[in-house]
Length: 450
Ligand SMILES: Nc1ncnc2c1ncn2[C@@H]1O[C@H](COP(=O)(O)OP(=O)(O)O)[C@@H](O)[C@H]1O
Ligand SMILES: O=P(O)(O)OC[C@H]1O[C@](O)(COP(=O)(O)O)[C@@H](O)[C@@H]1O
Ligand SMILES: [Mg+2]
Image (tube, rainbow, N blue to C red):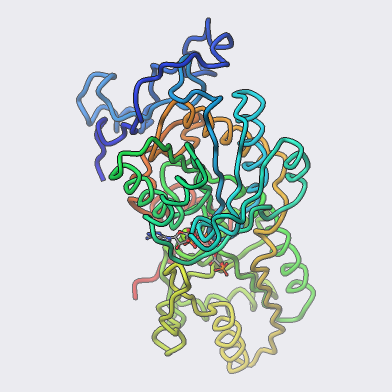
């Protein structure tokens, strides 16, 4: 998708007429390698060839508005009531983001009231809108010490108009939606409904995804904590597999459509022989199929370790009638168990080949996303929260805050849901996986035409 400068402009509610409480801090600031001034922009692309292709002067190249505090702001903090909601699946760092938002709003901007909606967007429906949590600095002081979200989260559809009514009834001027593709879709619809009614309410998104499947963000918050935990399971399974004759270790990791967790966790331990992700189809049968490769590994090395993303090989399950074709409350496809299919087909294949396999299959599932954010993610979450508050107070709306090429920037929300971030089979991450696993050293990478 070719993007132009105009596609990257974010919406403003109006002119910034109030002095920011942070303006003194900004007085002498200029763009430097470590700071982007509020009038400057951050380039979308970062190679000479991609930039040259546009044939445009620098100021016309596609670029993002820099995040960060402004000298002048749109909202009078004394009149602001902020709302926060967390939606979709859990992700390490949700509490860190909530804590950062509340602290920045109340301590720096002196916003008097922050309301937490409970259990996801369900909390904005007529039935649940009065069941909120008052978020004060005291209430959030220690919440980053635990995983999950103190607000609760949920899946399931809500009516945008009903949610706007809730914002009006609760006197919300700025709403922070911490959510994934679903949550950002819902927030975009909500912002459109607010705009259609001509209301003065800012909607700011903080993209959340354990799968790292949202575009225009270097890596989503919590992702590092999650794949670090996933890597521990790979270690366990490889120790088990190595200690068993004809040992087969299989770890299935979250990753509905994107195999980032499988790739990064595998690289972190460098113990996997085969990595399977949704983006790279594979065959079971045939000389270059998975079963033959597994057999070769077992015969040469004595054991094999396979890391599989849960969304990989869904076509193989469908062929065998093992997919229900059902969806969850938010419309996400329910997946079949690729780990179980691998366990069964590998066991049958090796047994028929005269081996006596010992299979160790671990599906850590929620255990990787319920962890507390590590120190790196905590810092990341806090800085995203600061950026989100600055964006809201400066009257940005339908805008997500992300880190892009190490800078914090504003992205129009519709762009965040325009497509899915996936591992590029022609990109350098997958290349690293092929190099690290030795999948390259075989006759061909495990990328099988089917
Ligand atoms: N396409 C969509 N349009 C509007 N709302 C959506 C859409 N997809 C999901 N939602 C809503 O957003 C919320 C979170 O979505 P979900 O897919 O469960 O998690 P996530 O935000 O993590 O992707 C749910 O309440 C869901 O109903
Ligand atoms: O059982 P649940 O809560 O639906 O979650 C399972 C799914 O949630 C995910 O963690 C992604 O969820 P989100 O889109 O909500 O971030 C997937 O990796 C996984 O398939
Ligand atoms: Mg999602």
